[in-house]
Image 1 (cartoon, rainbow, N blue to C red):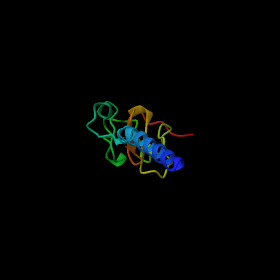
Image 2 (cartoon, one colour; image 1 turned 120 degrees about the vertical axis):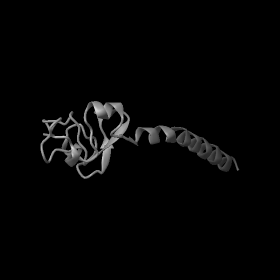
Image 3 (cartoon, rainbow, N blue to C red; image 1 turned 45 degrees about the vertical axis):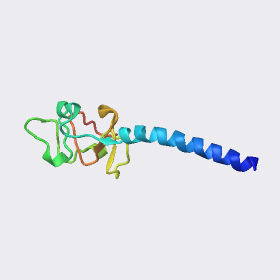
Image 4 (cartoon, rainbow, N blue to C red; image 1 turned 30 degrees about the vertical axis):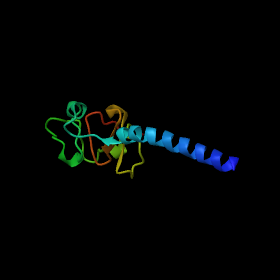
Length: 103
């Protein structure tokens, strides 16, 4: 009898703790919008092929977030965190003026 009560209490506490942190995890995974002030400042584009090459002369074909040293996911990840945009994720196919080639 005591073990059932103990399991119930432990399970309830674990559920409450995980539910309390769920909003934090969801917020951390918010995708960066091109209209976000930090995105505008660094010229972030969700699709690297749509970068204004006249404005961002540093851009070269083949550069995208997934092959940037700041991209926190694997090269095959659709989105991942980027320390240049704290608390937001970026598209692997995206690009910004903070781009630095891996390697």
